[in-house]
Image 1: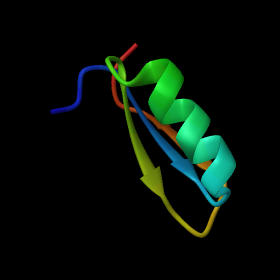
Image 2: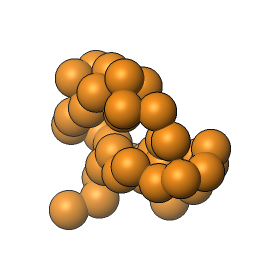
Image 3: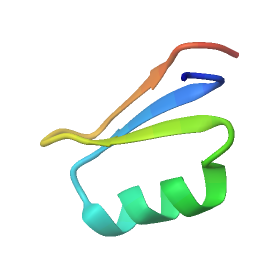
Length: 41
């Protein structure tokens, strides 16, 4: 379920921070590129 942002990180530590801080509003996915795709604002 995507409620806010989808964040793509190539760094596992940043991914973990995204999940812990934004679990409600973000779907955090590990990808081999730096990218932030805004699905809603």
